[in-house]
Image (cartoon, rainbow, N blue to C red; front, top):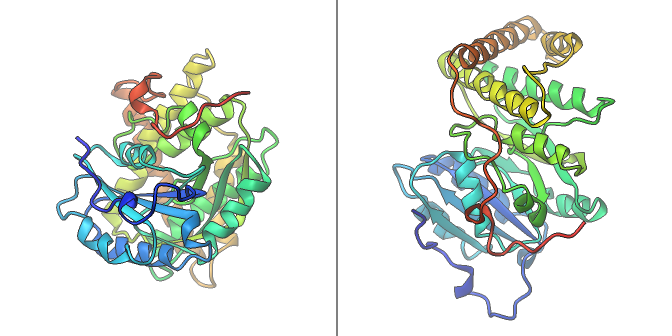
Length: 332
């Protein structure tokens, strides 16, 4: 159950205050130091303070997020929503339900947005009205080989989709923004993805299926500091494989197809060779080996879902409980 916000914007601004342009939603679970670093970066944004708000959704972490958030209340409009643990997709939806902005911007508690992140993002959103905007992601843990390999996979995927003739694109919730009304027109993130994988890919797929457009904005930059051990690296990409299988299955079902459609062989070849072309001297082989390991883990995750069928992970039914009370109606 959602609790009352710990910090409420209604306590420090009059009722006639203009609503914020953009609402930043940050899900969090038990990472107070990372969250504090993320909030410090948001408090240092060049976008005027009254033009944005931050909603932190505490997904039932072992340590409440409110004490970490409270010191930032004097520097920006920020509030906390705490709920029972339901996964990042549900946490993002809960944060978005509390949002008052015309646009929703998503990032994570282990991220450090650049100072101009929101200013450049709003500029893009105004230039491309109605679009989904995906920004660039930069690995901040240069000495972590697992973080480096994960980043290279992401960079390769972004590069591949940006050149795709079909226009299909995938953006991570590490750095993603959408108009609030269109987000709720699609009922937000599918909460049938209980782990941190797949919900962003699924939203991107449904966004395109609805006929909405998207744009990659490389100047809109967010740093990412997610470290790994060998075991956690394997688990992460194994989880990606499970989730991506369900996303592809949902895409096929909505299009009336049997079976799932994979990318062309060139896509996978590009992922495997990307580290050889984009690594620092002496690290190319190591990075390529880890990218290969990640792809093996992804395949095993997909096989697991194929051999052990689970519940449907497609978009949730259209019900009022997913819609934000602040979301305006949309006309086409």
